[in-house]
Length: 145
Length: 79
Image 1 (cartoon, helix red, strand yellow):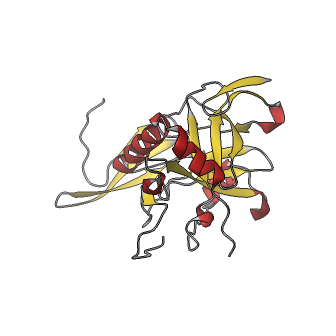
Image 2 (cartoon, each protein chain N blue to C red):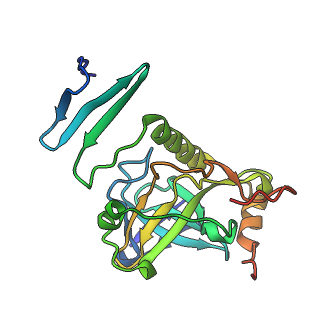
């Protein structure tokens, strides 16, 4: 099927590419179908199948924050029908700025995807010491995550 | 919004499967106990709203071509 995308124009996708987000995402609760499109080597675009302009820049947090950790509670594991950690993909939403080195990542609410069942959700931990807007490019202080 | 008053120890039922109990009242802090099905998520409102706002901002950016180019050509770090 053909979809309209924010960064790639018209794209051909197949039904098996579609990742379902049964709860949508906070702020976008009605948007429940996405595809993940690579954007270079490091980034992906989490693109809504139906709404061209709902497209999140995402990346693996481990690419930028080597000590990042997330512990998935049983309720989330059940909600996403996760059967093996091999099937889990952790992504974070990037707020891209101009210039690029001022961009930030939302480490407080990572996006968790069960790649085997194509189910996803933005997970908001009960408590998190991570930042909502953590700079991607660390300054000389090298705070890390 | 439904407004009602409860005393410590009393509770409220929302639908058939959700219960909110006033567990303790200590000064201006009210401890709530919430019972809900596993598929219903419970958040502190200010945190949920902050995520909503951050998501909306992340989506609304109109990025210039040179920023997009920088992103596309960034290479994976070799550890």
